[in-house]
Image (cartoon, rainbow, N blue to C red):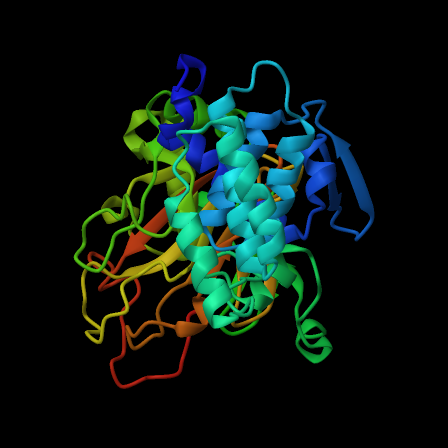
Length: 412
């Protein structure tokens, strides 16, 4: 393989390809338009916007995405990407890559249920590069012809776990019942008994009643958002999730695509002030809270659905995260919403605002309604700074009642 294509094994390049795949499936994008640099999206009001990124993909780009799509068993979409690669072939595309494109196209046609098309592409591949490996493909075709298989192996969606309503919520479709929406309200937090906030007007918008999910508008200043980003950006790295054994799932199914790092409130006076405001609003002890997890989601970056605290049967688990507080440090051109899949709640990222909810019932048990997901970023970048506040150290601030299995926490 030529030096120019050695990067195909690079983890970041594969991540980028996987991110594009997530965009196609989540937002139902037209592959040809996307390959030509055009992205269709909707604003918060529902109006359709077409963004011209002025960056069309070349043959190698489409080949790499098509190859990753085959790995995801999305053969219909893979065929489109590989066809785009053929349409973009040029003098700099090596014979090995061209042969591999036809090899993968042959495999896709076979899986879709078109063995004659598969054989056509299968003959092209070794004609271009005689030493290309096609034995596996030939075996697949023989099995197909012998068993008269169908196209039952074709997937409509990627193999990561996003469920149907996540796609709909990410696209901005309203799924919440009107009777629930009608009870939601906006209000100013009562700060008369909180000295640190007495002169501050805290604007609160309810996104759901119980569990209470709220957006705090204009919570941050421009200088605060820039300070958090500038302190964190030099040290952010690829993020992974923990597997069942507690180890990082580096090679498993992609469930998160982002970069991030930790930011401590003592690193800067502005960061410390933000933490004090969060403590005043939540009534929790911030000295024992986790540092900020500052995360950057680039185009295609997402986080599959998850809980923010372990699903433990022990209500007195000191590592349990009572509260999740997300600071939005940037606006996002399109995509990137936080969605609660069991409540049909969609929260669009808005710079300077914060998203807040309790992960536990008053009993200390996990509130399973808080299952949520971070939608793929479609245009731009999404910067957030998440603060998780743990059970430990909150005994006198937010005491739990192990006999109260239903009650939830509220701010008002």
